[in-house]
Image: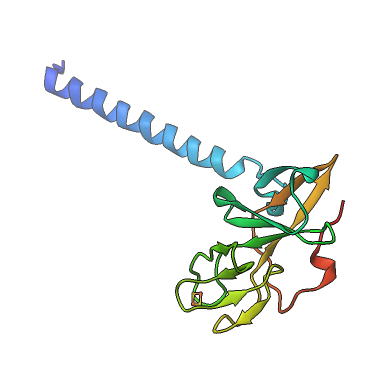
Length: 159
Ligand code: FES
């Protein structure tokens, strides 16, 4: 008759524990692989609720630092959301209220109220974010800036 030593039974228990852990890990990997992925489009992204449209005066520029954009209300009442990142080398572009322009501190590019280049080296206008107005509330989708080669009236959102 074979005698089981305490050392042998400990090793046997250790092997059983390792086997259970390996099986659990395998099941977790398989379950993760088989789990259905979300089919929601990525473009839903992040939405910034800017506020009621009548809270923004015509000709105003309002900074939204968290969303990295300026909400511009043009003289005709339309809205543009301008990405604050310079299209030259990516510096943050501040709004200069005194001159009514965006002036990049890095290499002196200047942009007008619509984000168009007034003074290079910036190669193109400031990027924009989609704006929509729902029940009088302005919302900006900041998931991905949109490149543009020039200002176009179709970029403006009206209430
Ligand atoms: S990064 Fe703005 S002008 Fe160069």
